[in-house]
Image (cartoon, rainbow, N blue to C red; front, side, top):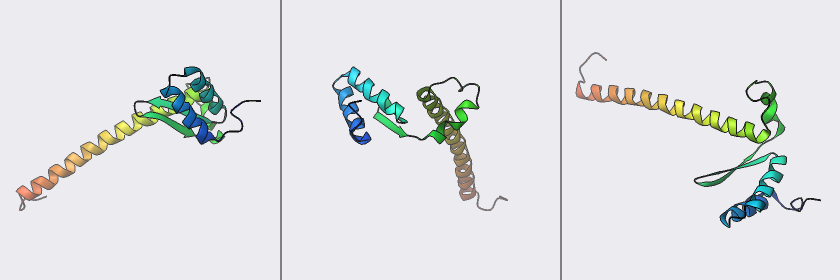
Length: 117
């Protein structure tokens, strides 16, 4: 029997964060590994830990892609997070460019109101 079985997931996430703050890496890793098995993946970042509560549907495409087929579920989630971050950066970059173009057009219209826009 696992000592974590009778605890709420939210409690385990909190205990893991406290364990990391106290540099209790063994307990932190045990909780992380236990939660991985429940498809709750916790990643640590500059702003603290972030938990992803997933279900089996999230992993359906994993087997279809050659680059992700052999990854563990944890590594697949890391891969997807990284892919999403890259997509968001590209999207924000293109939106910023579009916004700059729109703002530039607005300024030109204000400066030259009689021009043929």
